[in-house]
Length: 244
Ligand code: IPE
Ligand code: IPE
Ligand code: MG
Image (cartoon, rainbow, N blue to C red; front, top):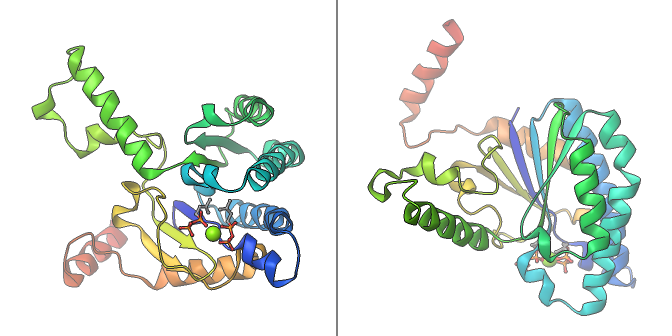
């Protein structure tokens, strides 16, 4: 089972347009997929689930759609509160959260605080998130720390750099799923994706439920993760681990 799964939840607009509905109806139906996939991940013992809900670039969509998405987000935080708390889920957020309207930020911070002690699964919402934005912010904080004399640039390594990312407390990303048939990353978790397995599903997000999620997990389990080693080395390591 992957320890950390990230999902690029795409295809809400097309789902609605195919039915002659306003795009927002697709986003609304997508909330049900969020609930189902979260439940399934929790039940299967996935340690961390990160959902790309709104990108830094999505602010450029029509104002009406952005406002509708923000209202849905607020409704989600309200309606899922009980389920999150009852199931030992810790809610977390990454991204330029300060750009969100107050009516989203407040329930988000409240639920984040209320669920802070939960240890079942960490559910991270990527909101106003961009991978490049995260890296630039990290670079800025590294430079500031260096100016204050708190770190020596020559000693900075990948592990040290990682501690400046918004995801610093999450486990390594194992699997990234993108729905809706698009084969691109769209600025999601760029650094963290380095050795993640990628799964592209043709299913549109509002139709992406337990079954589709299980299919992606099954694909993941078929993969051999080599991290630069040869297959023989990986097999040897696996059998040594099994014996230990
Ligand atoms: C994903 O669905 C949700 C967000 C990006 C907020 P889209 O709204 O991108 O759906 P399509 O890609 O237009 O179908
Ligand atoms: C990626 O989807 C962002 C989210 C799922 C929140 P987009 O629909 O915004 O990505 P592009 O524009 O197709 O690359
Ligand atoms: Mg899209």
